[in-house]
Image 1: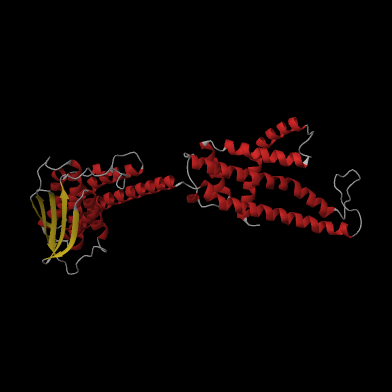
Image 2: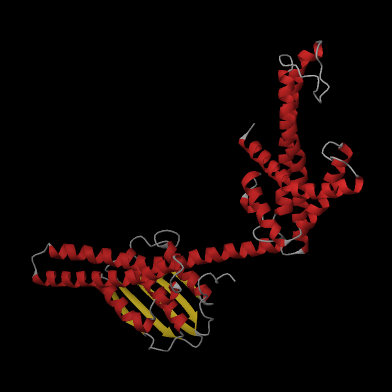
Length: 418
């Protein structure tokens, strides 16, 4: 017997135990109406009691709260895949009807298997021991006491035990097949589950963008600044040491700012912080410091047309800052020391962001070596109703992003796919 069969057998025995209150209640009524002294020993009364108990089982299972415990038992004992079963109480009439059918099937088969589990093993043991231990004259069983039948009794006992195991396995298989049909989610619940999954993926994607754009840029800048500082400290020139001190100061400032942004993102993971998008400064607030950190890392940046404070809506301002940050980080990564042109231009329809640098010896590919950052830029632009392109253009590597100023606010965490 496999572990799955044993768990399903236990599930059926639990169903038999749940059937007992209904069975005893109906049995008491049958006993009073039919005048049966003991319906347990009267097969017709026993069958009638069992049959009349099942409609009562169905009625009680129409309560919406009846589905969660049934699903919990089915998940643990029938071996059904967790995603194949529904979560929460049954809300619609069809869902309640399916739950009632499952409850009747579970308790009905469970009553039969549980009753056989109680009755068959003792009788089988009696048959196994019959050639050695003879029943007394008062035994309720008509058992052979002599002849070939006496010595065939152990085989009959083994056959009974095998039949019981087969019936239990078959009934358990029926329940395992019926569970997804009767306890599975309805189309509406499947849609809600898909929406929840999409919202969770949106949260993960948004957090990934925030971590990549903030921490990734900072680590790139810190690595370049530390390398430059080490080389200059090894040199004899005093001005080299002074520049190294400036680089170390930039490392300190970059690390301190990044710790704050990372803490905001981790606060979202702990469900105790604000939307990670609010941790990013706007262009007017954060662009000067961003340019200073990038230049301190050895990147010669020329900025043109920075927007004035208060010109852009706050959500657009923060997302534009992240886009500029990723563009400069990409320049640091693929061509450190090369001149970079950052152009921010207000147009009739919105904001244009352009980051251009001379093509490195090996041009970066959007799918490798920075592809995640460029994909994040494209996602940010798309969520705002804009567009983003990156690639060679006239001897330069150019990132072009267009953002409409009339865009809807950036969706908060978990709302991107709604």
